[in-house]
Image (cartoon, rainbow, N blue to C red; front, side, top):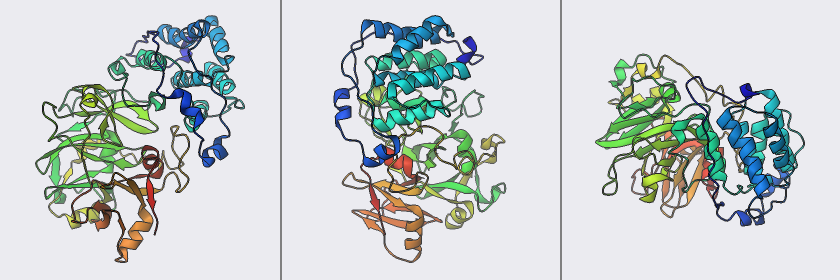
Length: 460
């Protein structure tokens, strides 16, 4: 069944498993914490999870079924027998490894085998559709601990497909259970190679811009992400950001890294200058990986992985330095409103859209997240737009955009601790009591709430 495992014409499957005595922190306590009622209502009660190391026999089965199959790009009787042993182990932790391999499998026969094994491990009824998504949603919602030696096995599976990930799959402040493949390859081009072709989502470095009057290709109702730094304004059209997903730019005399996650409807702007001594400017790229349906970005110089939603380095040298990037506000609005409020604005040129006109927001993603996210805080619908910001006390707070816009339009005040919301160019941003920028941005509720699980939710 060699064709059952996904292959790329220019990639070679390679894998290796180093058996170490590693376990996830606090994995024995994971199931002691009661799950939220809404998670149990949607997904049911989780299965019992054993503690401790795997037996030698089970470790050998994991190697045969998951590591050797990737290394050899094949599936035969030894793998089927090993998978059966894994499925009969009564150890739900191993469902994480089954899920990881499922993500790359296209053949229906092998997909069914893996799905049935995961269902048996998790005590689920056989999954008939969206096998990988259903299994992974349960794993996340139930917070099933990872098995021993998990990162080593996962690294073997993932880097067997894309060798460029080898420097990324390292220990750090990241929950590797929740990392999956986004369906694209890593952008590992050197800095300022905007025009260099790649089989990836190509970031734009130092993008060409034009004056507002020259941007005749944009309609007034087209969505843009507006940023203003030190009095200089620039618009980043959604048509461009949906095919680039990352821009390294200079605005108002400051360096910026601007990721856009189409899955989260979230454009953010991070200052990549004024860093600690001896830390070079991070050049941000798309890794091709996702963390609970949020793009995973990394620095091509240090190969440090960042939590895109938080702007925090979570692996590599920059994580060792504790690097936390400061945010600038991003205003999601329409082009007509932005240029009216900022007549001197510049805007990215049409050529950066690469001749494409995607609308993921109203197309691909309109019926809910297309990648597993597990349980979602039920206080708002998963795709409700919010304005998110972190207060001076460190409290994350979300404002339902539709309600906040109506309240502000009536001239009423919206405040939470030191945060004040204000209308700006047809959008909303958060400022401090003295009017200074607090680095807010718009996003889907499911994304904000899962990266800020203790978030406050403003209500009118």
